[in-house]
Length: 420
Image 1 (cartoon, rainbow, N blue to C red):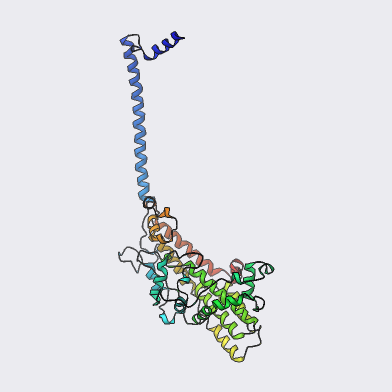
Image 2: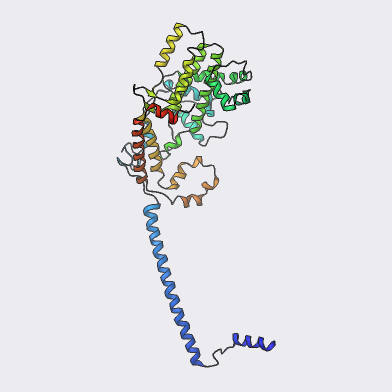
């Protein structure tokens, strides 16, 4: 056992493994050098390939990935002025306000009255805080409203005041029923408390809706801010709730045989919808009248008051006819699509690299990881060719507008005619 172990040890660690023959040792060393020469050549080749790949990657990165800024031109930005302070980019915020949206004196803007009455609630519904608190303050500044003044109205969902939800087929079904058919307070006794709570605000909204204009201004803090950040989806949903509340109260008045208040609430709901949520002349019928499937439900409810009560007088009927003739105009389709185009082009031009996009939307990002400087530096290096994307967007919007010109009211109703 010990002899075998000694033999293995000597074979591995003998200081003269070639039996002391210097010629055998030189031959072995020569063979090792040959092998080393081949390995170095392979290593040098691999290194060369790696260097070439790095150079090609850098070329690809700086030409395709890092991002190419949007150039001002007819096929990219569509308009060539007004320009931002650096003279290199179109100021789409000014373009929207100057070429599309009208100049409205504050005292003629019904939204100013609603803003003063409800305050921050319009921009920060109770389901969560506002993503951009500056939006409320800038809107107040634009309309000359004190952002710190005490509010005089509040909105609350009628959900917890409703009874008979199961019998009506669910909460949504019951709410829809209350907005489209007359009902009496005896059928929903808890709703009396809700009406007392939201009633003062609905009165203000009803008067505001009857003003010539009801316009929520587009605002921004800095010139670099995206137009998109000046639009609040919370505000849109809040107005949908306000419209629903007016319809519910209007149908309650109709159930109480109160023609005057039923008409005023339902008329206000229709005017608010047209000025805040609808806003787009979707398609024009063969008679030249704009056709709006969603608003058709509002019109049905409004006209229902003409036959569902015996309190109509000739004077009220004459005034109702005038009210229908004087409904606010829809924003023309070409202007609405122009606004959509400008907002999208502004986002493309401001965010040809994703770092710029993160900067622009910093207030809307709840995840702290996305605010990490290291992450932002890394992601900021990635981008796209803004000109290619802008041209593609313009082509798609042009096709979309042509299709809207060709579609018929029936086709549109089949496509988008869901109940409001």
